[in-house]
Image 1 (cartoon, helix red, strand yellow):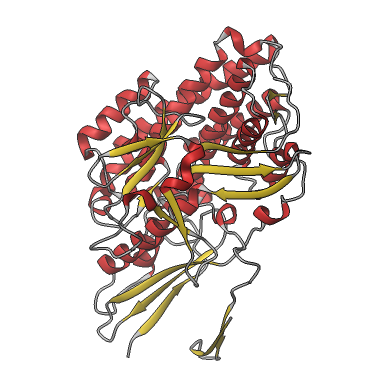
Image 2 (tube, helix red, strand yellow; image 1 turned 90 degrees about the horizontal axis):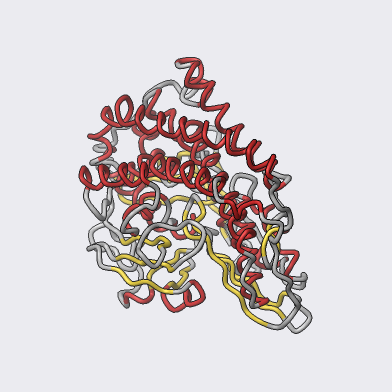
Length: 481
């Protein structure tokens, strides 16, 4: 008889998930499911609020990526009010975004995903974590902790808060940057830049070469990609056109306000996460590994594929080397981790550039706004993918409708596909061990998913599935709504 394997919880990611692997009578993988077992309801309880409150409210969706929600929300408010932020206000938003990226990419690579590479996927789970890394390589551990701390300190100085910020407001930024603050933050940013240069050089020489066989085989799926680009095709993490690229590398650019013309969201009964797909391609939705339909990916690897170039010199050199080695578009899932370090370097460079811009200390940081009925779409590239905030208001500026598409939501179908591919590649004839199951988990961790951000109550109904397990740990019955 067939057998069901369960990986629960999936560790070292933001949120909660489990993986269900169904084996057939021969012990080979018949099917897999990534079950997301938590829920957020922000789309519902934001309704009825003054729209200017939403940039402060939505930061509580997640404590790991609050800046992405904060800035996408502020941009949606700009669009509702019909205003362009003051130039210094926009640059301060971009500065905070770049700093937050460095902090979050350090968190994911070294604290979450890195243990699989540094300690090895088969290492004891007690040491396969950041503490194990620190014990094995204490000097690296010290540098990692210090530079992530520098990110928090810089955000505190620029905005007053590093977590759950309130400083981006409709029309700009509420807090000008003083010259003393600029000088203080610049020194910190330059230190993070030096760390970023070291990190990617170290990973390319000491880490990634050991895992090229796994990179070329585990979780590999052929999909499209989505990211944000400027008019010249260079990557932009704060603003620009959305580029939706097909698996063959052809693409179409569109404005964020038109996202609903290009993206549809599908609901499946076994997950609180919606399944977005490329409606504009006209091929429907399918997660079949041999013939996927409408599937695209976001996040670091997707942005490296979608953009034509990077606007900072050191990161651009790394992108050129990456493309020379793996091509464009690159479909190797585990290379999300390599792309993440390129983005770490890009954001460190960009933060230094912004801090050297004389306009960054202008006192004029906000354009006045007035309530009105309207619709506004704001988007940013969150570390985990393209993030959309879509608001509608009445004449008094009260919110009447909210729709969010979160970076991880875009990757829901690809994550499920990558897990299925990894499980089928690794588990044969019923033979598996902890190292193989952890390697399956690596296909999820590559996406740096933020499941608590991405889950929504879709129709007021809570889908619940309860397994009744006997003392022998066998499932005796299942109850479902």
